Image (cartoon, rainbow, N blue to C red):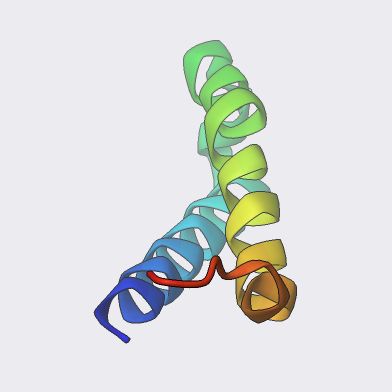
Length: 62
């Protein structure tokens, strides 16, 4: 249960970073744009998939 809560917080923080990227003037900074596209977006996709269908892939015994 603690693992799921941690992943939820990562997902929320990533969403906040994407909102900052969209609505602030920081999107003109090259390093911020690249970091959002290469780190935060895959993190959001991965955590979203885990939260949505992760229960189907849990291994037995863990």
